[in-house]
Image (cartoon, rainbow over the protein chains, first blue to last red):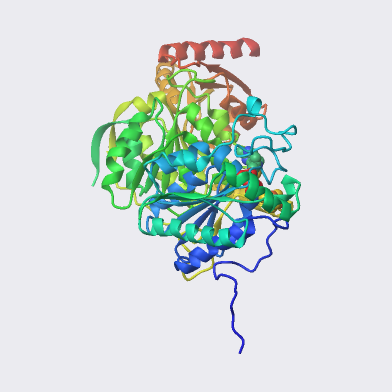
Length: 246
Length: 357
Ligand SMILES: Cc1ncc(C[n+]2csc(CCOP(=O)(O)OP(=O)(O)O)c2C)c(N)n1
Ligand code: SF4
């Protein structure tokens, strides 16, 4: 007897993604689709896409979407959620989008305890524009705009967004996860689901920071990139649940 | 029911917005329009399903409006010149994504932090596209507290009708003015919004976006926008003309400057000068047709503005070299008196007479 043991989540379209081989975005999209399916949210969800490699996330998730200006997704999501408090609103943002140009919007949405969910993809680089330094780029990491390696005397220190947001009362669920191996993918899947549950329960702001790889702009093969993430990124950005309202 | 009440310009906009069915207001304080925030902070939360948000910046405010408008709700933001500059990115996205919204500019002196006094120096920014890309925005310029109330309805209606941002351009003087207003019961037309993101229930997902990554697709999209703008130019031009068969000289002015000019004009008419006024109400689309016939008949156009000469360029385009178009302006927040304006008009007129001799 044949049995289906692995299938595409219903909220996931059958479009081919435009991501580079090994890119983390595809996996993370899938986890978002899983959460939407598991919680039966497909007809209620309104996603807000960023500017970055994942700008066209709306091609891959079969739900209503708004495409926001660079960094402004939390403000756009705020506008949507205030008008439609019973819908489920999430943003999906990279670390250039959220931690550089959109720092103000994310901090204030969190501080207001805006009842939205944020999926924050930290790949320590600006992917779309060709690999420039991000606020999250690690010390010593070489990028197009830190060709000698990030030098703290000139380029300062990497921003730990989750630790920063952890100081805010408005935040109800906050976790940092990674997608570098199967075990961590499962943990990430649970965290993303939990973040959506936070919103359903109207508990306020939820954010999941997902450490991800950008083999193309890191100049590594996917396997080496995964190893680099596990070794270098996880030690600077420890994986943990910072807050859970339960 | 027609109530007549005394109110401030900012409040008239607030009342007009609520009666137009505005569901969400997002803004950041700045003089001279902070009273509008205060008014809506008090009133909107009293209305079922309506929200007021004091945002962290004007950038956040306009993007909240983007999100809210994308759900089909009537949405409004307001600011004054420096804050309107910050909203330009969002206005461009809103125009690109074809979202309806209303933006109030109680404009003040610039550039930079400038002054908090009334000015009209944001005319170029509003009418020529302050943000990036090929787009247009409807710009309405009321001249009284009554019109601030009335044109708030018009602004919301045009925004929905054409899926476009609409700016209500007033200035620091109008927003602070206290005048009697007839609160007419204007009927609000409801538009169908099947493009709005409300959750894909029983239908295919919808997308609100200004992104068209393929050049051919973007060109097609911009062509579509400009077909819409052509419709607006055809249907929505509004202006007031106080000219007649005998008019020889025409003042062109809008907003508070038109009020000052009107007083000066009444005085000059009593002195026997055949002078009229054209007051553009839509700054975009600019009322070109108002000038077509007049340009053949009159002797001189005198453009008056609270800036160093911005609308005058549109007047010159409309007059198209047929007659001389002169300009006088004050800026920095300085308001001329009607007497000053009357003197200016007289000297411009005598200048033309000399030239023609
Ligand atoms: C206002 C503005 N500034 C700059 C850009 C160019 N830009 C596009 S994506 C991007 C950074 C994307 O990096 P990130 O958010 O980390 O996402 P990733 O591509 O790595 O997924 C930048 C700077 C833009 N589109 N808009
Ligand atoms: S550039 Fe990096 S983030 Fe962008 S698709 Fe390629 S691997 Fe992914």
